[in-house]
Image (cartoon, rainbow, N blue to C red; front, side):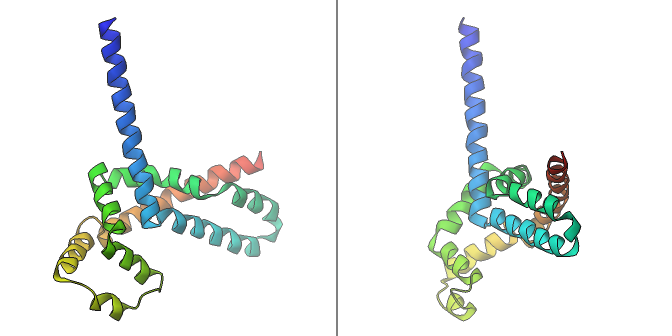
Amino acid sequence: MELQLKSLIFFLSFFSSTLFAENYTVELISVLGADQKALSEFQNNYAQAKLQYPEKLKLLMCMESKVNLELMQKTLTPIYSQKYSENDAKEIIEFFNSELGKRIKQLSTGQLTQASFEKGLSAQDKEKLKYMETGLLSSKIKSELQQEFYKIGRELGQKIGSSCQS
């Protein structure tokens, strides 16, 4: 009985820590806007395909109806969890929830000019920005994530297409 209880406790702690880490990954994907970017890319591809292949409109509309933000998060989670540990995810989330992170979001959406952004940077902000750009958010990591997404995105498109043809 005691062994079964210990096994159950171990299983529950492992499952909850895995679920906890996955929640951080989904939050990371959301904070970075990767899910929204992926969804937009799929939607743009479907819009172009509808124009190029009008004879496949019914299939393309079925496929498009199955793609949503939740599906993008599920698709991106394994990719991001391979690149980022739970601690990395926490650090990036904390960074983007900070004042500096919020200003970066404003800059990326055009709500803030580059000059205004740079004017308000402290020496500490510049160090943090350099740390993030050369480490956790380096262009190399971004490129690797994008390549993985394209690979998985093609597979996802094929699965969705197959389900619509059934």
